[in-house]
Image 1 (tube, rainbow, N blue to C red):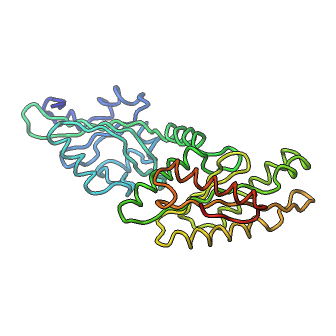
Image 2 (image 1 turned 90 degrees about the vertical axis):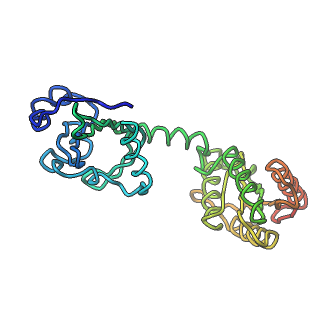
Image 3 (image 1 turned 60 degrees about the horizontal axis):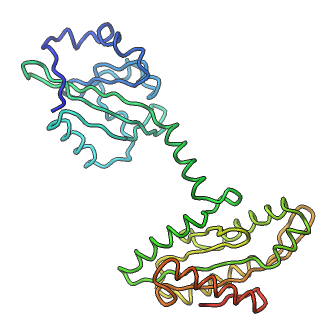
Length: 305
C-alpha cells in the first residue's frame, strides 16, 4: 500500500504557508492537500496559476470546485476506492478552471496517514497537459485528414468503413459506399493552373459535405476522387441512389474560380454491404469498378455494383 505516514500534530497541518511552501512553492506541478473531510487545507502557487483559484478562495472548499462534469459518479467512486484500499490513484482527469474553462491534467493522489491512524489527509499533485493534448490532437488530425480539403483521408475512411461494416452485422443493417470521381477536372486544372485546381477541390469538398447527412462520412481518396460512406441503412439501394443523384446535381452546378465559372460533374459507383462485398476491400473495389463503368458510359451518372 502506497501510504505516506506523518506525525500526529495539528500544528504540522495548520501552518502549510511556512512548512509546505518550502517544498512546493517553486514546483511547476500544482499541489493540493485536503484534510480527512476532504476540505482543502493547502494549495501552492502552481495550483493558483492553473486553476485560477487563490488560496483564500480554495481553502475549506472541497475538490468538487474543480469538477468539470465530464466524469461519471462511478469514475469518482473508483478513484476514492483506490485511495482507500491502495493508498494512491493516478490518471488523466478533466477539471474546470475558475473561469469555466475545462482542461486535462495528469493527477497523482496519495493518502497521507498519521502514525496513530487517527486520520487521513490527501496529497494531490498534477500537471496541466492541455498543450500536450492539443499537440497530440494536431498530430492525429494531420495523420488522418487530407491537408488540402480537411476531409478524412483514405486510411481514416477505410478504418471507419471497417467499423461500420462490423457494427452493421449485428442489427442486420447495411452500409453503402459511394465512390466519386470528378468529370472534366483535368482540363480545368490544366487550363487555370494547380492553385485554381486546389481551390476547386476545396469547393467540391464543401459541397459534398453540405449535401449529405451529418452522420454520413465524407473523405478524399486522392486526386479528384472522393468517397462517401452511408451508415446503418435499412433500405440501402434506394437511399444510396437518392444520395448519389443529389450529389450529381450538386456538383453539376457551376463553380466560381475567381472571375470564371467552370462546369464539372461527377461519376459515382455504388457498393452495398453485404450484397457487393463483406469486407472493406471488397466493398471499395466494387464501388470503384462501378464508378469506372459510369465514367466509361459518359459520366454525370451513377451505377450500382
